[in-house]
Figure 1: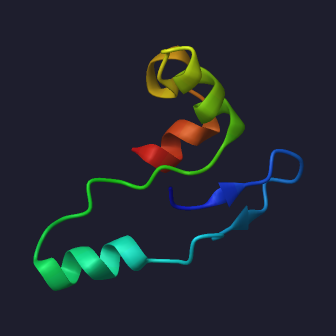
Figure 2: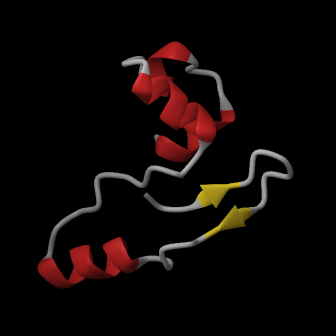
Length: 66
């Protein structure tokens, strides 16, 4: 998980820190495959077995993943 997006105001908060995965990947010489934001739509769709990139491909959350 990369960042929390507030569902009310869309403010972004790095509750687990910032760029830790990127720094670790760089030190190991590997690529980061992607960052998944903490967002309610992603969680709800994942719980239903419907990834948000399939169920809501035009949603703002998808641009953060891809």
